[in-house]
Image (cartoon, rainbow, N blue to C red):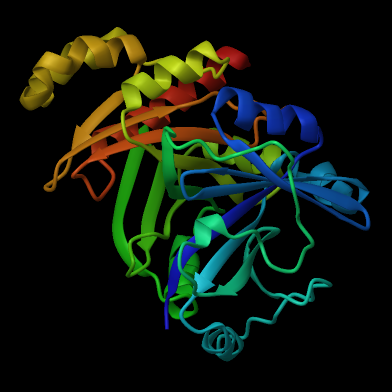
Length: 340
């Protein structure tokens, strides 16, 4: 038994129109369908095989009051939903009641996982348990910049990484892929990456080191009032051109100091000829044993700064570059210090 795909990610948002507009007008998603239920309305967005549901209404007000805008549910397809539930019960995990007649397990914080049977092309199927009305006059373009959802970064409480890594391993069949420990001044971040055998479900679990000074992850947990998805990473074919288009459409990205690029040519000689365009686009670069990794991170478009986004291009790379992990941590820290 194993989880195979991320079918969708559902974001609860206080201002549905503004959030949908950000994904559609700025990031190039297509509005596919709408669903109205008692107390809530949802809009299904799609680009490539990445599906995002934006939900608002009085039925989600309690979540929004506590956490602000953020990911509330992650739909996962499984080889065998019944077996996944059996493993959860054996681990002492109870199902979460759902009025939609779907199977829901807890994830982290107030984030849940709706379990779905495995099916071909899950990124083209509307989430189960709701009546979806297609949006008239809309079509998915033949050419798109986002290919799929590469991974989710999840911020959990300090000291809980092994617990969550074990939970996703024992119940969902994910395996521990890598780990990283980053220090910056008196603060530090620990992380474990868990991934499905299919390679299409990746969670980067991050946590502050409770033995160090409070830092940006502690601030995130405080803003969110608990554990949550910190950012969503979308895989793109050409990150430099994607950044140019998204920036023109209003997406704001985190800045990277010139010193990073001054050292990049020495650190990655194979990218020497690309440093100028990477500097202009503010794209981070790294390598692993399989190839190159290019990443860039947005500023949060949400009022409480509870969720941001990443564009990632993999030229053979399968993992997460150590230098990029540190660069992201430093970029978020600069943003935090300038906003105080």
